[in-house]
Image (cartoon, rainbow, N blue to C red):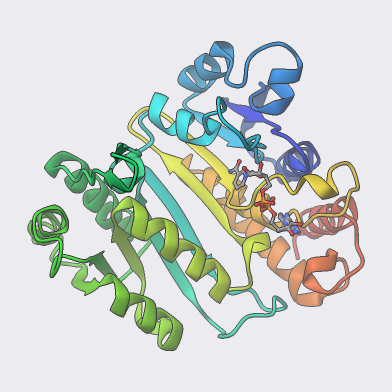
Amino acid sequence: MQTITVIPGDGTGPELTSAALEVLEASGADLKWEIMHAGQTAFEKGMGVLPEETLNSIRRNKVALKGPITTPVGTGFRSINVALRKELDLYVNLRPARTYQGVLSRYDNIDLVVVRENTEDLYAGIEHMVGEDAAESIKIITRKGSERIVRFAFEYARRENRKKVTAVHKANIMKCTDGLFLEVARAVAKEYPDIEFEDRIVDNMCMQLVSKPHLYDVMVMPNLYGDIISDLCAGLVGGLGVAPGANIGENAAIFEPVHGSAPKYAGQNKVNPTAILLSVVLMLKYLGQNEIAVKIEKALAEVIAERKDVTYDLGGEATTSQMTGAVIRKIKSGS
Ligand code: NAD
């Protein structure tokens, strides 16, 4: 049986991860878990923000489910999420965005996937002041980094029966960096003749997504564009409460909601478990437990569509545990 690492996280993270574990247990997934800590919770336990034993647990189990972590504002605290991505070389940030009936959104039937490169680009954070009145940041794009992310996008498209991959860039202006990304994307695309390929300049992509989102399917892009476009896509389908994510590398993968720890609601049993449950669905698909993944997603979609047992942000009055309980009842009744 597969063991996964579970990091409850901070703020509302623990209540959300325990909702996810209840659903996993009810679903019959072939999984056991090991609870490990990171973030403020770990810091308060005197373990440091990213304990070595947590990293070792993820290295050993290769798959983790993570609640959001609070990154205290101020100097001296690096982002634990960025540190995890770097330590484990999680070069893919996978963010699906699809509409669910019952969630208020601008369009119906949107089903998009953003594949964001997670280690390079301006996001590498290599920057410095030049004197007092100017600053410089270095944008890094490599052939290896571009090739592995574009290949992931095509493999994902093939596995998920998707029809098209769109590479997003600004190669008309950044001819070296984004030019290299585009050149590599075109070369990799030739190896996947069964999947349509096209490219879009990032500004045009934003406009197209807002006005004609149904034209797109899987989109692959460097880190910074991915950061922005994935939030745009989350907004298109109803916001952060319903946005799941995954960070994936060759040797490990971490599944987590896109939203943060919402500390003002911590301990109130109030927040929406949808994003973490959809992250569980992604995780189960990654582990090849497709049937269970589909069962959970279907149960969740039904609860959302009925609009009865949903949390405040979806227009309901249910608590986190009431909404979770409704999903579990659907799973058990097999409806
Ligand atoms: P946030 O996502 O925690 O909250 C933004 C807004 O969304 C808030 O109004 C909150 O109430 C609401 N919200 C968030 N999750 C919700 C849910 N599941 N259901 C209903 N409403 C929800 O963003 P923030 O306030 O900018 O950040 C809080 C902390 O989280 C910060 O310390 C930040 O660094 C951290 N953070 C962590 C992660 C992560 O661990 N992956 C991601 C983003 C932010």
